Length: 218
Image (tube, rainbow, N blue to C red):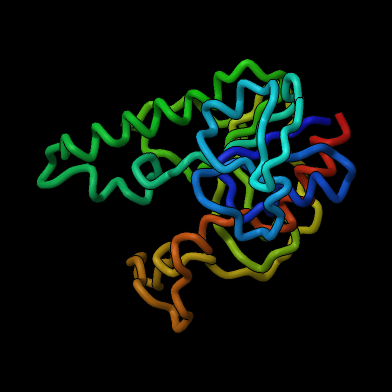
């Protein structure tokens, strides 16, 4: 299967598909931290989704033809519901932020509407005001063997819902700000070191493995 993993510098999903024998490539404007330049397209994902001949960071050209599967992780900064508090000030929409949200939505929809048979787009729960299409399902890391909660939505086209592989009953929030105290107030710090944005954005290996196993068996 020819797989494009767009907006992925960690190569977590790319490597999961490679481990199962698929011709998978990551694509991002950042160099990969995953260690495989020979599988990474450094540049515009909008160009990469067209398929045909692609060039990886090691300088080699690959004729992939038409992609069989697209998995995309578009930036969520201006789309996520976690940023809703910054979208309005004293009840009024912040126009500059709303403009950036609409640009982010357009980028998201490029992936969702790509001319590829099978598509999965991943993002946190979006703000209603943005008006993204309804997501197919919401998943949690603790359903795939990781002791954390971090709600993630999947928009799927011609793909079955992702099935849990190892559900853990004990887990804690992966992002500090996402936890509430006994009074229902958000805590800024729960005694854990805050993870940087790049780390928070990485796909959990258990979820990546489930995608490769379940989507790769089509």
